[in-house]
Length: 381
Ligand code: DGT
Ligand code: MG
Image 1 (cartoon, rainbow, N blue to C red):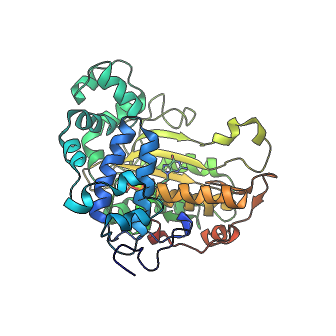
Image 2 (cartoon, rainbow, N blue to C red):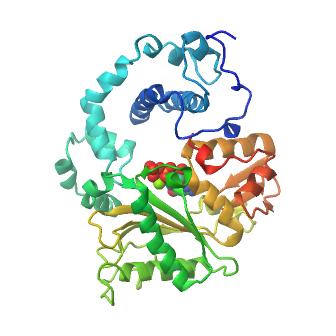
Image 3 (cartoon, rainbow, N blue to C red):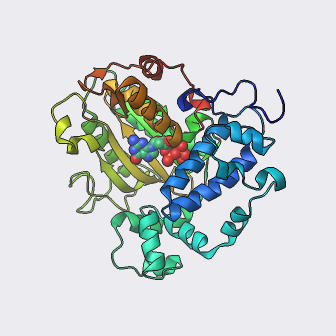
């Protein structure tokens, strides 16, 4: 076993979703740099290369020691020759990373895409065709979506990271209100905090109930209460487009309670657009409310995702919202390619019959896929 060999314990043939991805790993410095390059490729629409970087980063996160040579890097299947050849391994630096960090395009694109509701495509259009460079330019734009307007309104707050203590406090407000509506409601703080992160960009929670299947009624009531109650408890007057008077697809704004603004409130149902899936078991009943909240006594607004699923879709929804995004992708790809199953937030299904495989827990999902259970703290892929 020389320094150029693969580290003992790392096997190229292990499926991605069966590796352990702890928060702290041995190749942090290199992964951070590759992330800059990956992000840059995404911004310029070079998705193929971005994917190659992501695969390399995933392998590096699971690699049980720091990479010491180009030869060693080359032996890792997910690392292609271009990435292995990067000057990092000899100099500890990557020139493109350094130039990217001072590059105007990247800086402006970061400013623009940090507005909630603005993706790389819109930002590129604004940058290249309309010449936007600052938030002031964007504020003058006439056709901002409601989501983008809310994103601009809370721009500074939403860029600030959330510590786990505050995330737990924010989650506790929702948990308490949910249990006051439905005693015995199931509740999990998901997202990065469930994976052991101490900091995050938002607070994600998933709710359910053992018996009660009315997730829509539950979410409506919960949103209503959380819009009403907050720093100023008590009744409030709702505007015409408030959550009370309109379909929940209409956003409420400037409510006086804990929830300040609602960005999205709907059933995410990609499959119900698919004619083939209509009337099968394979239809999502998961409901979501993506909103902006302010915890009692705090001055900073936070992004929060409140997800509610019926009990039989709860385990897969918790799994789906626990991330990381990359880990979810690898698990879903494995289910598709090796088990002929479809794993989605709303359940695990046989691909052909679309029959749901009952899963009461995350462990059940791994077991049904024939996989070793990977706990959330090791899903930081
Ligand atoms: P953060 O908040 O930046 O510290 O990192 P995470 O890992 O909490 O990421 P976040 O909050 O974007 O999302 C949490 C997980 O939930 C993520 O790993 C994938 C999943 N997720 C996020 N957005 C959606 C969505 O719109 N639909 C579904 N099905 N899953 C989502
Ligand atoms: Mg999150």
